[in-house]
Length: 355
Image 1 (cartoon, rainbow, N blue to C red):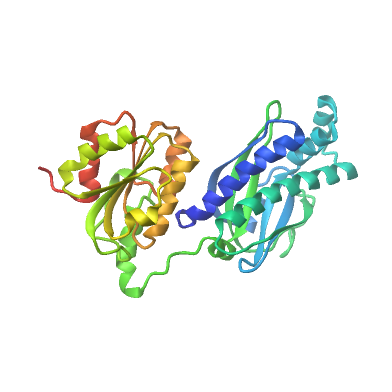
Image 2 (image 1 turned 90 degrees about the vertical axis):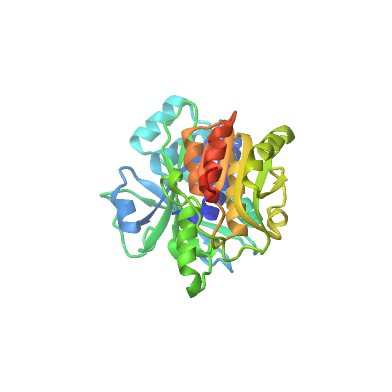
């Protein structure tokens, strides 16, 4: 799933916004956090279901024509719709246990689904280069060992990108919200880089070196990117704290490379213009979505062979580390930075000889 980092980032933002806005609708604190992604088939996905579910198709307009699917577990749909309707906690748990869903529950759940789809529209419209409209289709109920799968129901046969997110609400035991996107539609949202035949070998090396492997300590770049601008070999430093930027500049003087610096909001294209960027160092306090999104921007600027990226932050979580590697980071550093550690990592990623 490393080839869909941009799509992963869009969905992560959309789901996070959907959780916040749906929570406001319910009068509850609700979080929806994207946690995993993989390629699967319709058969594999439904064979692993233990509870019933609702499958909501989302029609995607031109030039991203197709349909993808939101899958809510039946117990979660009952709990959320019951909360919206104002049922007391005891009655909600009884309805959940007995899988009771009446007409009013369907209407309430549809309102919740519309809220989620609205968040997807907002994010997709702001992140994609062309206009798009996402239209929510009526939900389809599926219960294992009761309903029969067919070639088209509750969704078409085929291969899918599955993005799994965890829903959490105080006092409630919620499950996952899954997004299933046909592989071909995923490629429309997040096109693979176009690589000329003569550049395929360099592209393979660059993809490995850009952090799209499980072991970040082994990433190296051989040569410069085929789509890099001619110019002086450089290191780019992105950090909001000017004192820490200056400290990093002083540490990197040993490289003899040109240093380009900017804040986390700097124009990446401008910083890269006229430079053969050998390394990008991103510094922050927290390894949060804003900082992780910069990895995507760097990869987009030098799409064929992105430069290695070192991310440094004061606070790291296991999830943040996994996200950093998924988004293209080659290495991480925990602040306060040890100058010897930085020198060692920079030498390795820039292929500099030891002094």
